Length: 117
Image 1 (tube, rainbow, N blue to C red):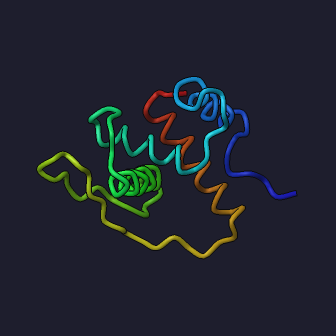
Image 2: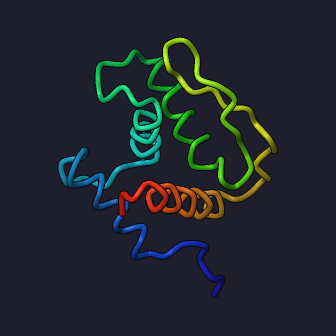
């Protein structure tokens, strides 16, 4: 059996973080996780966002968690404080399961770096 890139215990801690604070006990999906990480990176708190803003926040969340792996780098913040990332390298082609494992590892690393778990 192939070894996982992340600890199942740490992943459960991440899910519990969201369940207790944002999803009323429901297991969050990737959209929710990445959106809320994007909100955290924006640093303006939770407020009403447009549909386009929500998509941009999910992208920011994705960039933020993959930055330590060398896929993105923070380029600048615009006049409204929104972070802009530059892609440094392309994610390799991978099956959904491998992508999920990479993202779980990246999200866990983000949570540990920010002392959230």
